Image (tube, rainbow, N blue to C red; front, side):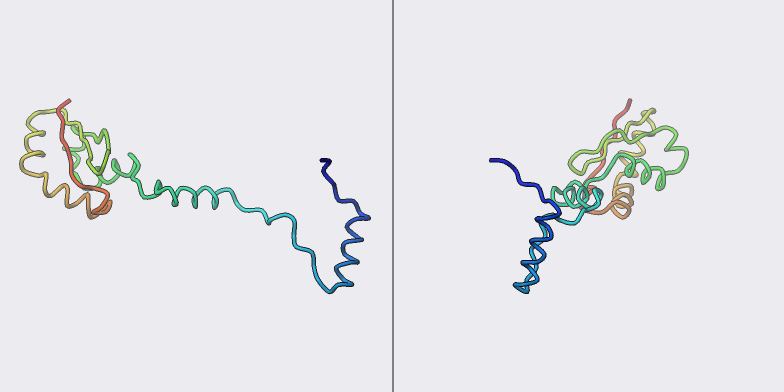
Length: 125
């Protein structure tokens, strides 16, 4: 079936018929949308916008920890609400894991959200 393109004559004819009937023809095309609005709506519907990025975790880590610890540690992963942190020295690993872990989790939950941070895992390496 051949596609029919609108010509000046057909457009004027349709306008004349619409005026005579007292109706307007429905618009055939939709108004354009900004691509960022469409993409952000799609990400929200998929639940991707609620996820944390690695940059968010690193920024929060550097914000709550002293410089001595941030020089010897680095967040390396985030999966299912658990943040994985690599530690260079075993003595710092012991201090973080045994003594400071509950405080660190509370601080990260206050910055990033309680539902996004469930715990933290320290690994030497």
